[in-house]
Image 1 (spheres, rainbow, N blue to C red):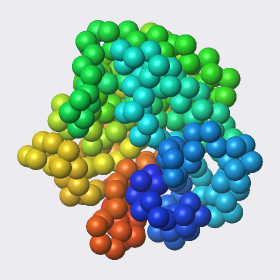
Image 2: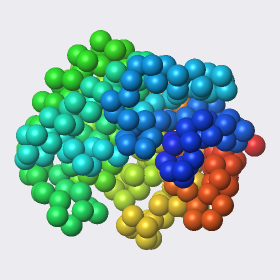
Image 3: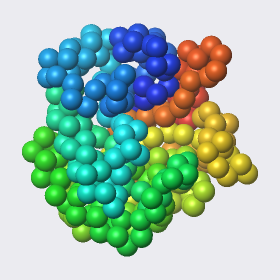
Image 4: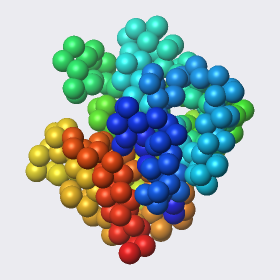
Length: 278
């Protein structure tokens, strides 16, 4: 397995080239790009995307995957058909971008029944959300197959896909080799055990996000640095090895208030311990 880090770990003021320099120096083998204004624009030109790829390759870094926070703005299962269309177009954009960047997976939030941190969030009936997510993803897998880029459905705090069995069934019913799970370790702890999800989802896991979480806190404030929470990392790594996962582990962490660059190095060291490199 290889180490990657999401660009959310860097301050917004850090240029992309500096992010790559720091990631390389800290010992990462890849980076996960973030698609949004101020990072990598969803409508980024082919020329710029190829330039980014060259910059990564110059530093012997791979672009492991693409993520975005825009799926909270463009809810794939919204009652508003315009928002659903925007979400589908975002997926198309990310697939195109990934093919040019050399990344094999995009992270997709498959819509939200409710967005916990938005007080005015619409509430979508669960069965309606499931049906809409299915219809959209089923339609878009042909695009994924054309670009040869995986759509990775994330298990996230969206009040949808609350069981690994349900997620497994969703993926198997659509039945594309380019549809799978972008598994987030820390997101599971409020509803289950990540090692159990990993064993159930098996080969359907396309990429893995590493986060840690303190269950006693139980809300968004419970997310902490790697090795500071309640994730049973030895069991998680054992489960990943059992299913034959040998791809990137991508740290999804956010900058410290003071000395934010220290987070990158601390995360890299923590990942070395988690992966048994130390």
